[in-house]
Length: 167
Ligand SMILES: C[S@@+](CC[C@H](N)C(=O)[O-])C[C@H]1O[C@@H](n2cnc3c(N)ncnc32)[C@H](O)[C@@H]1O
Image 1 (tube, rainbow, N blue to C red):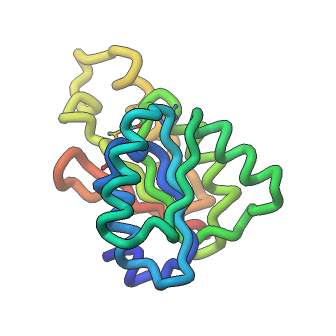
Image 2: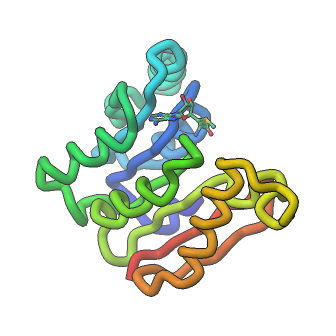
């Protein structure tokens, strides 16, 4: 829905797994739309590709096998800064701040970066839970609150999702 409301044509997904959320994006992209799907696990990529084929959206999805941060850096190096409308982050939790910094370069002003699992099953608000993933997401959330490069809205449904709009 966010992709449709935004009229997005160029999107990025960080963490694709078997393709559920990327398929949701690809299905609402216009025919000439483009989704870069970042995934490190070759086996799940094969599953995702089967679903893209079955849904008739393979021509819209550019699957990049490898570490997502490397893929995002290569997009920046290829001159694609500010050329994306929408990004969805759903991969390695300890890397959220780094993904966000890279995506902030790739997304245009007014574009969205949507970050999944920001409540981390409630652990971020429990001071007794201090494992490394929880700390990373908690710090990421705290940084985002003070970040004047974006407007944010934390949506407390499911495992929590923060919508960030680049200023
Ligand atoms: C929660 S799943 C993604 C689910 C998917 N977005 C969906 O909703 O259908 C997270 C995925 O991120 C991938 N992943 C984790 N760390 C990664 C990294 N550093 N680079 C690329 N992919 C990564 C995992 O292999 C896994 O498939």
